[in-house]
Image (cartoon, rainbow, N blue to C red; front, side):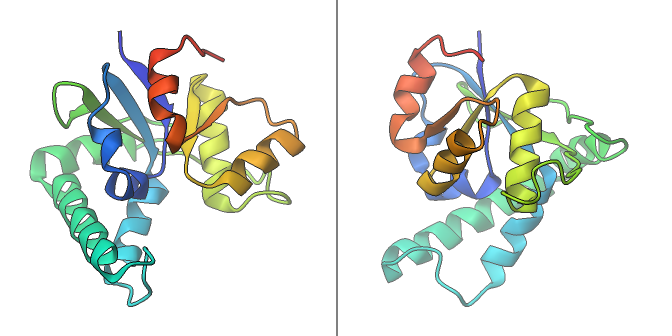
Length: 168
């Protein structure tokens, strides 16, 4: 059975280990975070501290954008965009990784403490009863501080999250 995580699209480009899990995983990705890929890819602002790493990550972002723009995948994504909280049919990446795009809607429920993307991640995690995966420790701290009813893991704990029975 596949383990489900809520994640930002850019995380797949930045953290290569997420594409090679020990067990099958499904990543639910809010559509807004796919749109963010285009901004990150074309921006002159570095994503990573090291120039070599930054170039590699921007290349991976380009490959991810190309994957989402493939006509078959694009049609699946457009299907999700037809209604709020719509989910695309599965987009398989490899034998262990499947993506699904969610047309998440920011209803400003957590707008005072979290930015719109974070709010979409939270609401998607709550709606899907799935765990959140992030590399932003301050985001995890705020989730705990404000008692947000989701389980979140740092990407450094990815294998633990995949292996464990941590269902919320």
